[in-house]
Image 1: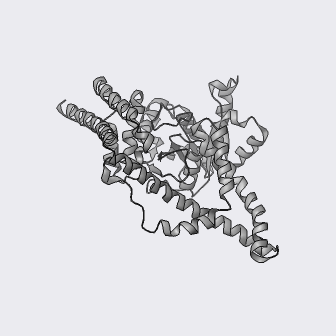
Image 2: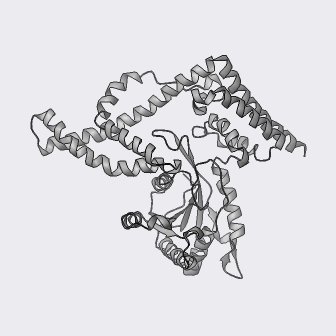
Length: 406
C-alpha cells in the first residue's frame, strides 16, 4: 500500500484485465482516496440504459478499429482530453492497457492509449508532468467462482517526467510502454511462454500464488519458464498430458492439491459448530443465489463475465428480494406486519447472507481438502501428479543452471 500515490498526484492506475467488471471493482476498493474514472470499450455504450448506467459509474467510451467508426481517432482524442481534465481536478484514471480482456494469467502486448492519455494531460496543463502511472497486478484463485481467493499487488509508481522528450514536450509510446510492461510483469502472475500456458497452469495453481507472501521467490520461479527450450517444453507437455489422462484434475483442483501432501489445507476445528448459524442466516437468500448462479451458467459463455453477471444482477435483485421476503418473516416473527419488524427482517437477511457467504468459503476449503486427500492416497493419481510437478520443477532448475553457465 505504500506505493499508492497521494490524492493530489495525478495518477493513472493500470492493471491486467481478466475478469470483466470485477477488475475495476477491485481497484476502486483499493484506490479509495479519490474517484477513479474508467475507459471502457465503446460498443457496450450502444444501449440507452447501459449508457446511462456506465456514465453514472464514471465510465467513458474508447473506440477500437473493430468498432468501424470513421472518426474513431477524433473521438478518442476528445476522450483523452476529458481524461486529462479529470486528472487535473483530482480524479484518477483507470486503464487496462492490454486493450481487452482474456481469462488467462498472462500479460499481453500493451496498447498506446496510456501514452496518448499522458500526452493529452501534458498538453492541457504543464504541471501534469508530475503525473504517475501506478501498475497493479490482480491475481484470482478461480475467477468465475464465489468466495475464492483474490490477491492484488501494487508496483512502484512510474514517473512520467522521465520519459518526456524536452524537444517535443511529449512522451514517445515505445519507451513508456516498454517500462510499463516490465513494471506490470513484476507484480502479476505472467505464465510464459503462452504456447505452453495450459501445460504450466496446473503447476502455477499448485503454487497457490494468491496465498504466498514470498512474492520474490514466486516470481523467480515463474521467470524460469520464459526461456525454456523446445525440448523442455515437450517434456512438460508430455507430463501434463499423462497427468490429465490419469484424471488427477477431475478428482481435485490443483490449488487444493498443492505441491506436497503436507500442503493440503486444514479446516478450523470450529467449522462444523458454526454451520447451523450459517444455514439459518443464509436460508432465505439461498433460492435467489442459486437462481443467479444457474442464470449465469446458462446465459454467460465468456468466463470473463461470469462473476460480472452474478455481481451486477445480485447488486440490484437482493435488496428487492430481501424487502419482499421480510414481509412474511415479520409476520412469522411478530404476528403482524410492522415497519420495525420488516426492517429487522431485512437486516437479519443482509447480515445472515454475509455470514453464510463467509462460511461457504470455509466449506469450499473443506471440500477441496477431502478431494485432495483422496488423490494423495491413491497410488496411481499421486504418482502421476508428483511426476508432473517433478518434470516442471526440474525443467525450471535446468534453465537456471544453463543461464548461470552463460
